[in-house]
Amino acid sequence: MDVDERDERGDQGGHGPGSGTRAALRGHRAERARRRRRRGLSVLGIVAALLVVGMIGTYAKLNGNIDRLDVSKMVGKDRPTPSGDVSSGPLNILLIGSDVRTGEGNEDYGNGEWEPGQHSDTNILMHISGDRKSVTMVSIPRDSMVPSPVDCDGNAPENQWRVHQWNQNFTKGGPGCVIRTLEGNTDVFVNHFAVVDFAGFKDMVDALGGVPACTPFDIDDPKANFTLKAGRHILDGEQALGYVRTRKSVGDGSDIQRIKRQQAFLSSVAQKATDTKLLLRPDRLLRFLGAATSSLQMDPDFGLGPMKDIAESVKGIGVDKIKFVTVPTQAYPQDLNRVQWAPEAEELWEAIRADRELGAPSPTPSPTSTEPLTVTPDEISVEVVNASGVVGLAKQAVGALRVQGFADVVSSNGDAVTKGATVEYSGDNEEAARTVAAAFPGATIAKAQRDLGQQVRVTLGVGAPDVVEVPNRLGEEPLPKPTLSSTPSSSVLQPRKASDDICS
Image (cartoon, rainbow, N blue to C red):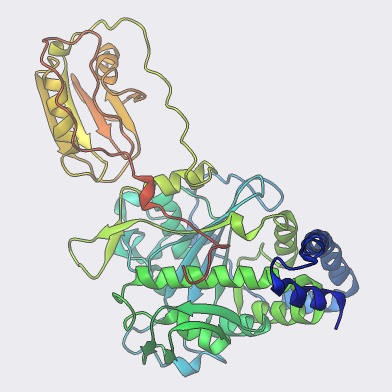
């Protein structure tokens, strides 16, 4: 029995003789463990470098395992502006799980005759912050109904897109079509993509020596070919695949609930990889990399070299800085078996675009000009357009404008969800637009692309402010108290940390 084992047993006595010595030993061991962890973390980079330098042949083999796919034509040319790359700045990598049932290791899961073709049943956008201090994993529900390019034509303008189910984009045009759809709906640039199939997922889990999972109830899902008793378990690759695929027979049978289980499992993967210090075990590392690369499909620029650079840049990120979040959704009226993105989704995408951590405050909008207003409300015709997704928001604003003397005010619904408040005008009506903008603090004033005549148009998107009194208002009737708000509730976005207990 070594010293540490004797101490462990001696500590069971509580406060008996020598407890002070035992407390000191516990403190000594804790500090020693902390030093070992720090040394271990510092060694990871050195071991990785040695592996690459000392195993050039292995590196070449692993890199050659990866299937390359050029999607440049599919994604089109009118893409968002990149905000970073492998070396610096924010980085967005789209991870896709394919349900393809052909190829070695995939045939045991049926032929998919109930839903022909391969689908992207798991879609995760991994956002690595520009300072390399955090990672946000955004799950996109497979049943989301979103505007998509018809026939996955990369050159089709967005005003010709049609609403389709999210995972149908992969069926029609592979990862290029998924990227084109994601970028067009979020204005988030995707730097790289990776697709993994059933076999690859299983092999990676097995290479880790199995991964812990937790279920509060028994699972019996014939479609996923999976059964599991309630409680904590260590799942091998085959079991893990069944666990993350299980849907209809668990809970409410929704894809959203399945995503939560997948996020909990991925959290466990992150914990397991950290606990076992994967890079310190060359045999396990090479097995894991071999399993991963043999079943990966990536863009031509995303090989082991860039992956190593990314891994090196994020090696200081702890599991508590890896967060999982799901795109907020609401019922899709045309088909209650499907969902559509809720207005709160814009808050999520804005945070990704701005490289802002979820929950952090948005930048304060610039104050409205303090120059005296020269046009009174009764001289102005106003149209309020609701582009927030909140029913009744424009009519509420109309009421608050009318009590201030804006006599000619109408409302309408927009074609798409936008962000903030925009006030547009035509011709020489900029001064009238300034008066209207004074009612919406922080609103952007812009000249309209089409002729609005004498009318000023206000578009209210997600996060638009409530109407306030303008300095030159008419009448003294108080503004009606608003009952609706387009400001997203942050409580809808509930990130899960990779460090959270897997049973939570």
